[in-house]
Length: 447
Image 1 (cartoon, rainbow, N blue to C red):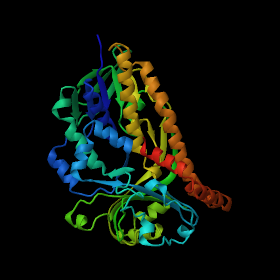
Image 2 (tube, helix red, strand yellow):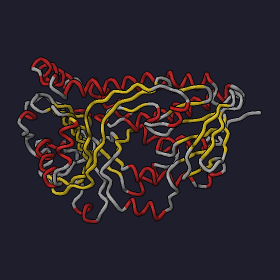
Image 3 (tube, one colour):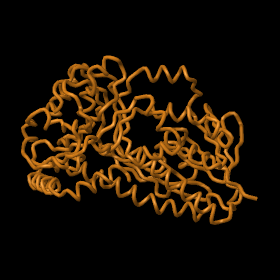
Image 4 (cartoon, helix red, strand yellow):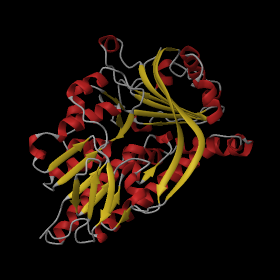
């Protein structure tokens, strides 16, 4: 008798996306979310506020959300900010990288060393006309607030076409996990003493994963000794659908487009951005205690006034930066996805996108091997090991690449003249190689 029941622990974006993916394939799935039950009034209250955080969704992530019927709801809400260009530069160096519009504007200049970006159109990557000969700029991705994605997922979880296969349990924590053997899988016990059994147990419960710890899977970590300060800002100049990142000696500074949510915003659009400002931990602590106006002025200066002065600043928060990787993604009848399996530096905004690629790879492999077994084997060891071989090396490469970039630009060693010259020459050469720039853009899009 077949047993294709999947139990997912963790109802965040990655876990809920996998639940919907499996339910759409008519596989029975139970999703357990420790967070309290939320009604529509709760969501509307959350959505009435601008979130300083934003996810840079790649085209691959957008494709997955479209497949499970979630992206359509996000698009209708108009709470997304599409971007068609990415701009990367370093302070006190030459070379600037621009992705998008076929990379036509990539050039090596020394403008960034003085903060002089030339005219407004050149400075902000004006793409109103898009590519030469094209009326529409090519989409690279979309910036969406976490609450917007979560609300769309919450709505979709309870729709009729998936409800026959999907059970959602909210407001209860997993207290115990028991492995019953490879034929039966796992039994979990919740804090209300409810017991649930499933052939496959999926840990999607974040960086501090209970599932990972109970399975005895060890974790490799790297403390960057940096803190990211997040906030939402309104700038004097519009962002013009461009995601920006300055590589500073103290760490990266990202300026990411935010959706316009008020009538006033829509009259004068594209002036709100989400900021992720990476600083050494002691500098971040000193900055956090300052008045918001002082933080805004220091932030504008750090960006060399790329978008002019900062008129408003909201929702200032911070979090320490660490990278981590589970030594194994799988065990008998158990698999880890998303932050439970890996966490990367936010400098490229790829954390959630890597988790969504986990979802796609795992669901595809589960379905493929289930069909090959004649509908008998769901979440077999061979299936899970194949998923691990697909995803762990890729995620490791991304994690170490981001760490290397952070090391190359931030800190005392990065400011030594030979390292500066290496960076300058590298950015200058890379910016002139269009096929390589297109490859980087493709990798960032996840397709």
